[in-house]
Length: 71
Image 1 (cartoon, rainbow, N blue to C red):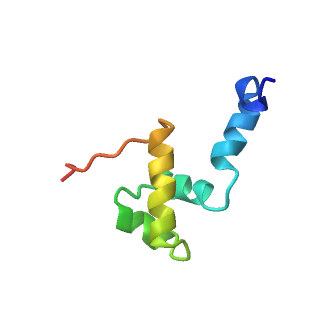
Image 2 (image 1 turned 30 degrees about the vertical axis):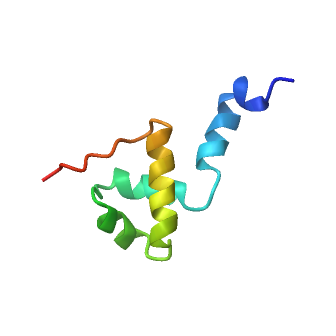
């Protein structure tokens, strides 16, 4: 059986953006937050572990990149 993710881009988007925190993380990135602490300051109710997990997931899916050597 074919999963809905294989043929429906909206279903794929909901898989990525359908939780409470990911749209807020994307908002912070869009308004200029660049480091982990800047993102966390914009979403103080999100736990640090949860934030790290969501950022790793966005990176894994190719929606953002991580540049540890940024000045």
